[in-house]
Image (cartoon, rainbow, N blue to C red; front, side, top):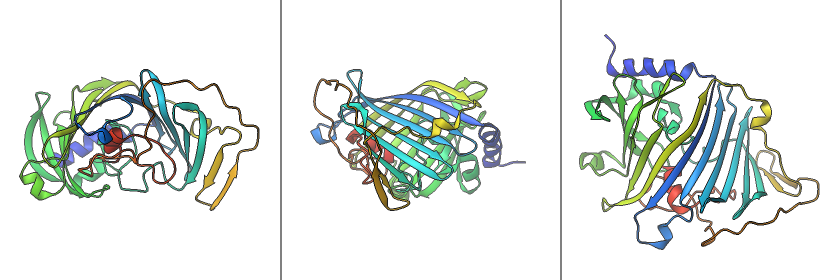
Length: 321
């Protein structure tokens, strides 16, 4: 008889390995509980659009939104081992500011975290697909999520920005993750002091695939108090569609600076720079601070990895977790 891990791996393998592509659009609403201004996000929601094919082609566009307008934007492309990050001006997101060519997709050189939007993120352990990681997981028993029976699996010391224990609650019927608890180590796990907890609010069927279209994640400080809440809402998801190769190749604006880390060279795209009219955005300007994640107790801003990606404090804490 198959073990719970083997059963879950088989179900997930069928769902994940039969996909030729996934196209996901997610809106994230951010709530900050900290009373410290430095921890308050400068945008109140984000929009992610992610496409990936079985051939390894990848595209991700991120927008930080405030008062219905994009105040920060970056686009990321991957194809055939070539990866490009395109960064746009703060509060003027129609203008490309810098381009970086690297040998990794967005922030994936900084840890073993796969750089995909939630909740797709939770079908991985680090960068390994969940069904491939399950054979080495420790089985912890059964619990309830969404009033459904779940098998609990521990993945100890996952190597993210800060090494952490990750506890997955997988729906017994579908093996879809419905809850993930993140602890710094075994001691904090024994004390039930999580760094972050992600939970599915729904379990849905999307084009024959089981997927949580609504979920949330809460980040906690050392004192156990909530610091941030992210509410994820999948606006659109499609599987097994075909995309032209141009989807995964950026179109660069004239005059934009390109830094190529693979050749150690830099240049400007030929042509005359055309600056569209700037749209004023109510409120404060976005602060350029590095991105965070649940791998740290201190909620900082979004990690730029030294390549000029401009994100924001609160959201980035999750981005790098």
